[in-house]
Amino acid sequence: MNDAQADPRLENLAIQIKTWGRELGFQQVGITGTDLSEDETRLQRWLDAGRHGDMDYMARHGKRRSRPAALRPGTVSVISARMDYLPPAARDAWSVIDDPALGFVSRYALGRDYHKVLRRRLQRLAERIETQIGGFGYRAFVDSAPVLEKALARNAGLGWIGKHTNLIHRRAGSWFFLGELYIDLPLPADAPASEHCGSCTACIDVCPTQAIVGPWELDARRCISYLTIEHRGSIPEVFRKAIGNRIYGCDDCQLVCPWNKFAELSVEPDFAIRHGLDKTGLIELFGWSEGEFLQRTAGSAIRRIGHERWLRNIAVALGNAPATPQVRKALMARRDHPSALVREHVAWALDQHRVAGAS
Image (cartoon, rainbow, N blue to C red; front, side):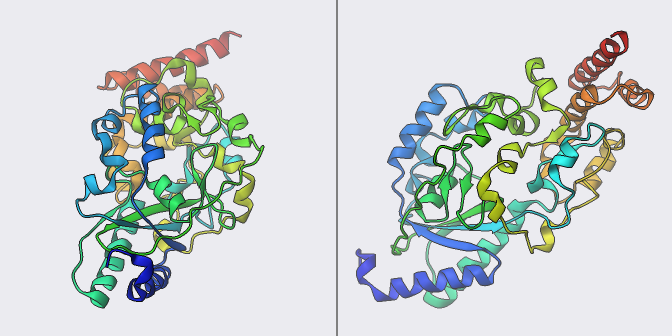
C-alpha cells in the first residue's frame, strides 16, 4: 500500500523500530520522509557563497545530499537515530580551555570513533527489521556519505537546528551523534521538531573566530573545527591566536548553549576517555612520534587527520602557550621536521615567543 498511515502493519512496525532502537543504545529514533527541498535551496546558497571552504566534496555530490532517493535508489523513508556521547569522567571543558599548557580535544573525539559504533548499531537495527518482515532495501549512514543528517533528524522529530547549526533537543541538549537508515518502506513519518532558540545569541557571541556569521549561518572557513580537522593546508594566521589551545575541534558554541543543562552523560563504554586526552599537556602530545600517534589514536576519530596535521595544530597551540624554556625546547625539536606544513607552524610559534620575550 502507498498510504503508510492507512496500513496498521506499518504503524506497528514504526513503533517497534523505535523500541528496538532504544534497546540497541540509541536515546531516540524518529522517522521521516525524503522531502528536503527547502534545505536543498539553503545548501546551494551556502555553497555558492563558498562557505564550505576546501571541502570540495560538498559541491561535488550535487543533489544526492538533499535527495535521499538519488543517493540510495528506492528510498522512501529515513530512520534517524541519536546517541549521547558526553563522557562522564571528562575534565571540565572550560578548565582545559583556560589552561594554555593543556590541549583541548572536542568532547566527541575523546573516545572510540563514533562512525563505527553507530554504524554497527544501525546495522543491527536493520537486521531486527529483517527478522520481523523479511528482506527490504536499506543502507546505513553515519557522517560517511552526502546526507543532510541534521535536516533529516529535525524532520524526524529529534530536535531543531540551532543558530550554531547543530541539532538541539529540548530534553537532551546537543551532545549527541546522529545516524540514519535509508529504507524502501513507506513508514509513517513523525512530526518535525519546532525551533526554540528564541532571542538567544550565546553561541554566536562566544565563537572565538566569529564563524557563526549570523543565525543559522556558519562560515566553515572561519570555524576552528574545520580549520583543525577538515582543512588540510596552512591555518590562516588571522585565526591562529583565536584558536588558543584547541588542537582538535571546538565545542564553545555547545558549551554555552542553555539547552545543554539538560544534556545526559553517555553510558556507552566505547565513548569513555582514551589516553587521558581530556587533560594532557601540549608538550607531551607534541612529542608523540608518528608511531605513537597511530597507536594512541587507533579506533579514534582523531586518526583521520594524520600525524602531520596533529603536529600543525599543536604547534599553533604551543605558539599561544606561555613562553617557557620547555615550550621553546619542544618547538625547536620540530623546527626541522620533514613536513613543510609543520615547519611553517613551528616557525610561527617560535616567533610568538620571540615577540613575547622582547616585550
